Image (tube, rainbow, N blue to C red):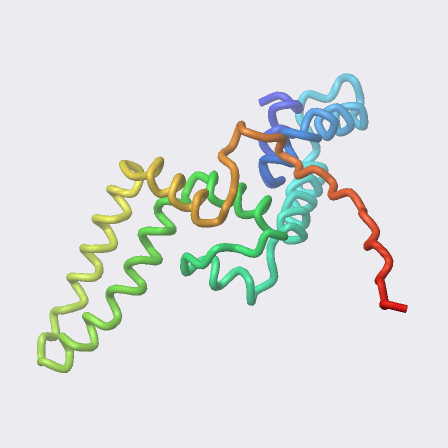
Amino acid sequence: MTAERQIRRAAHAFPPRWRQHSGDELVATALASLAPDVRRAPRRLLVDIVLAGWRERLRDRPPFYRWVPYLMGVPIHPKWQVWARDDIGGALYPQRVALRVTCVVAPPYVVVALALGAHWVWLFPLMQLVGWMLTAPLYAKQTRTRAYRRNGISFPGQDPPWPPVPTFEPHPPLDRGR
């Protein structure tokens, strides 16, 4: 594997919109820092790129008190919609939705069944989870469309990946009736 491919693979630790906006610049800078005859990127450089990508993802992430309700299907605060778009467009989003449904539906079922004396009841939620995880990719487009609409997020490709910078408009002076 060439140094450029290694660096591009390590750059996948960054959020997709960041890679789209600055990914080529990162690769060019990293390649320029290497000696011309180097075929493989140094491991330390790759680790640094991955750690920087994780830091960027953590910097973008909403705080815990906003993130947990979002995981349960509550619309995200507008300040975090850019992060939510990356999350919804992620590879495992449909499976995570299926896991969330299982975690909500299964515990009451298990408690009632155990209270009635059925000790093999743990098999049903497990089978349900496996079934939903396997069928989640079939409904991925519907799941994502519903999530985009619920959160008031435009679909990918409809606008630039970086939100426009809000313009500052001063408030008009107060008329105090004097």
